[in-house]
Length: 118
Image (cartoon, rainbow, N blue to C red; front, side, top):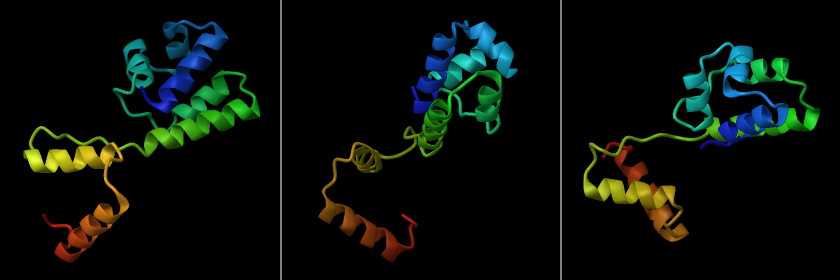
């Protein structure tokens, strides 16, 4: 679940809306709303504005929703199925923040010296 998905679900629950009611207000389908809430679909560019115009959110709630949107948009999805074991291990170590600063600097030097082509 993404930060935006969590925030959206909180708004829906706090307003007392069902998924159908929120989906209708936002002009999207219930399965699409559920997919957004659960992080299986990207957040459409106009959804933030639709939520803000459809629900009486305080400035703080709007700010929290905007921060959640930014955090969600910054996420990167990578399909690892076609990569070799070494590449998967490196990507997972990076994603889990499991590489010390020295090693990370060395990896960056290698990537920069190769032009990012391997």
